[in-house]
Length: 243
Ligand code: FPP
Image: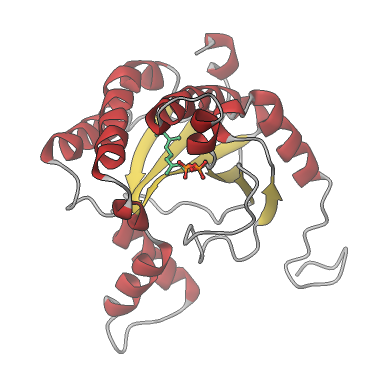
């Protein structure tokens, strides 16, 4: 990670969420096993984390493994879990040095104890980071989180959006509430949300790119953010009259 990119910056305000799709196709196009695509995807994660603070991004949520991804072949699931473990172990020092606070969102109880421990260690080692909040969604389902929050909202409890959002955070195991998503990017050419951050993306701007995730560069992120700044966000109000 380039030190000058991250140091001495206050935390930006944008929350960008990314569906990192296209690893398998990237590998297949090269006659490589799918796991090679995921490995190349991990390099794209590093590039993206490095570029984010310079683009005014304060929170970055990456969809690493959905609750439905357990249905993939065992070899691929194992390979992905191993990749997450190696990423956490290899990156934690650099993340801490550069003020990146890492947290995982999603279920933890179905992950191996080794991975659970690596996540907990990375979270506590980077807890003081103030430059960028990096949220890795692992074994994540937005619909399950919403169900969990609904089940844990006691009858009689104030069921306003703020309170419900806090319940959602608890469902993910979040220590702090994150802001709503401003910009949701999906790589890989598909145009769907795939059960990712459904509540928090109510007013997110959507950006779909055909670029396969392993080919995603800092310039692609910069383009998406520039396009975002060109959009008129009205949140249902009339232009220039946001209450
Ligand atoms: C979807 O592409 C991608 C995933 C299910 C895994 C995402 C994981 C990474 C980018 C690995 C690195 C992550 C971290 C946090 C180190 P796909 O395999 O479904 O692609 P396809 O549609 O081309 O088959």
